[in-house]
Structure formats: C-alpha cells, structure tokens
Length: 309
Ligand code: CP
Ligand code: NVA
Figure 1 (cartoon, rainbow, N blue to C red):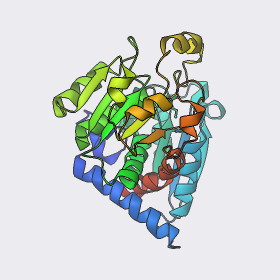
Figure 2: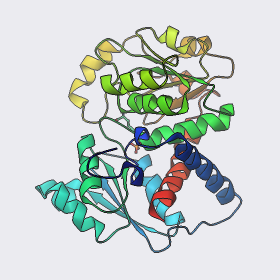
Figure 3: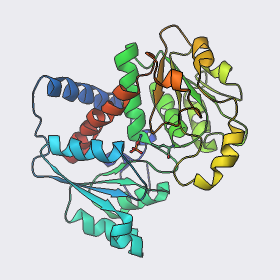
Figure 4: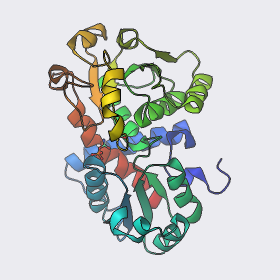
C-alpha cells in the first residue's frame, strides 16, 4: 500500500493489483473485444473525459487510449508536456489537482515512475501508467491477453525475454509474480532488470524466475519469445554502446527454433529489424505482434471502464 494514495484506484503497476482483479481485467478485455467485433457498442463511460499526457513519443498508446475512450462514449484530451504549462515548470501536484476538476481519468507517459505516483497522490481521479522508464503495465496486460488467445492460458506457460532489462522486462517480472508463469530473462551484463522488482518476483515465484546471460538458455522450450529495442526512449545517446553490448541478443530463426513447437513471438513495437529481431522472425507466422498491438485497445478499455465508471 502506498503511503499517500490507494494503489487499487489507479493502474500504475501490475504489482499494485491482486491476481483476481488482474484476471477480471483480462476477462473484461476479452469480452469487450468479442462483443465489439460482433457489433455491440459499450457506452460505459458516456460523458467522461480522459486526459492523456505525453512526455515521450507514442503511436500505439495514444491511438489505443484515444480510440478506446471514444468507443466507451467518452472523450480524450491529448496533452503534450511541451505544449502545456507542465513543460514550463508548473508543479505536478498543481497540474494533478487542476486536471482532477475537469476529467475523470488521467493517462500519463513520462520518464520517472515518481511522476505517475505524484499524480495519483495529488489528483483525485484514477491515474493510468502509459509507460515510464521503470514500467509499461498496460503493454504487459495486452501481451498476456495475446498469450492467452494464442496459447490458451498464461499460468502454465514459459516466457523468454531476450535483451534489455527495461520497463517491459520489469513489468513482465511483476506479472510473473502475480500470475505464477515461468519467466526467463536473457540480458547482457550491466542490463539486468530492476533489482528490487527482480527480488520481489523471485520471492513470489521462486521456481519461475531465471536471469541468464545466454539467450538460448532462456528461449529453450519457451512458449513465448519476446524482446524490445536495445535503446529505449530517453537512451538515444547510448544507442551505439548498447548495439555493441547486445551483440548476440537478436531473436533470429536459430533462436526461435530452440523454443517449443508452435512458440509465438511478441514485441511491444516499434521494432528495429536487424537489431533485436531479425526480419525473418518479425514477419514469420510465429509473430503475433499485430494481435498484441490490437489488444492494447481492448485491455485498456477494460482498465478505463473498471477505474472510471
Ligand atoms: N508499444 C507502445 O507503447 O507503443 P508506442 O510507443 O507507439 O505507444
Ligand atoms: N522500452 C521501450 C518501449 C516502447 C514502447 C521504451 O521505453 O522506449
């Protein structure tokens, strides 16, 4: 429990939620998806507004939240920090209190996790984490939804993470702690996941978590192989150095062949073909990245409907 706000009224981290509530989000996401495809409209947030604050670039997160709130009968407000007073130094605690007087929910993509936490502390509407340097929880919920669609379940599956111990890897660890699936992370030395998140995941799921320097050890027999860019947003200056450090960490056909028969490939996108993933794997039948991107829409509608109704 955070000291200054009720974590369950926000979606800042998968670690903040109990497993039954996470499962309900996935079930609702699947229901909204199926019913929407059958032509049913869900006006669950009629007349409500979602502020979407972006301090970093985005294609999928912006579009999926914007279309999602619209489909639920609500209204999105796109706010880029550079074109708002936030970019000129208005304190977060003031922005959060003002926004809470106008909107029914706030989605933020930013750098420090402390920024989303400060919004939750000072605002009085639900805050949703649309990516920080530390975490990307909405993406991992979409990824889990995609694994369930393609593999039938998540709990008994083995997920191989190849590459940087970044915001995606940290959120996979949080998810493995809750859902109990097996997660093997292959990261180069110096690029491990967050140590506290790793320790908590190992404590919650002692037999399920492995960190190795060997991509083959991680991918061997895995049901899902997944990766992300070597240099995340904000790390552009390190791109060259990281390219060297991540030699041998590309998900290519040779690595995919070590995975279980029928294994799928996930990537949150955008992807850098020829770096973290080969063109061949990215465009192969095993690649379910478009389903994964689509599921952002459905699972985030479930998150908004659950928090903002
Ligand atoms: N996967 C993801 O969050 O994509 P965007 O950066 O395009 O939002
Ligand atoms: N790890 C990447 C994810 C992008 C969706 C980044 O933070 O840039």
